[in-house]
Image (cartoon, rainbow over all chains, first blue to last red):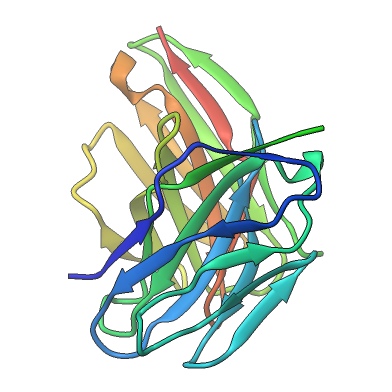
Length: 113
Length: 110
């Protein structure tokens, strides 16, 4: 079946540091890939997405590139802010799984001033 | 309107109570979902509605009963819940991939 593996957290960074959160996946067919962010006490928000190989999703300074050869979709940001502190979930939707999303376990990011 | 609205935001109920969670979206999305999320865990799919018909039930206990009165509304009826059902319940909708989530209902069963 489909699966998503995220780097284990928590991740703690200083403000303006570079962020990478690794995400790799296993899926049949050609999945679409997503990053969601969840701030404390909130629901999940779609951060960015990519629907085919070599696509780059970007939003709010975050980027991720769909790498089919390495089955990866790593999240990056050049300079994090305290307000980026949240839980980040990598997810996929495979066209062979009735359109259901498969989520990674989430990575908690804390940014300190 | 690009939001999914869930009410109530917080709910405390006894094990003999009956309550309902509500979800509304006006984006014209034809797929709607209920998820359950425990602390520090990813969301777990409960139900999927597609074009107002139940298409997926992930073996959820019958004390949870979903309902889709129309294309904009989704309800989750709760009855005789257990303390382990305490969680954040999230509604989501989608069209062409990627979900829009509501802020959730924080449910506590006492």
